[in-house]
Image (cartoon, rainbow, N blue to C red; front, side, top):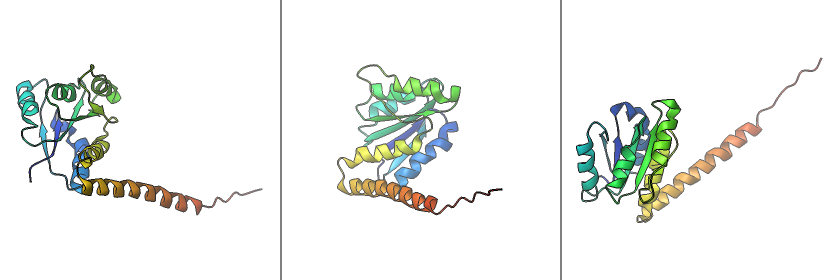
Length: 168
């Protein structure tokens, strides 16, 4: 099956974070590819990827970068495909990457998740794809319902906690 989502990271050092997006996509049975491309070290490869992504069947791109986090914006400038940016905590607690990804010029949007928020990037990619896929839409709804169930169960467990205060 051809990939619908492309996970791109500026460096393989981002892989521990980006595996969370890959897990979400696997859980939703969404085919994806994953590659390391650098806006600064391999700009020609980034351009080739971005300009050919749509023709290659990619429907959503998740792009992660830390420090000088230009990768998501550079990709977004070269493709009509939605790009989700994942700022990586590589320096300055990830704030530099967050601002670099979120502060895009008019006309070049990049949806931006939290610092190291690859799981949410995977979920957002699934939600974007679900617009045209009723089964995936149902699967995403079930996932969201499971989040509610976890909180309800957690509150039930919290209600069972008893505090014992000792008085003198």
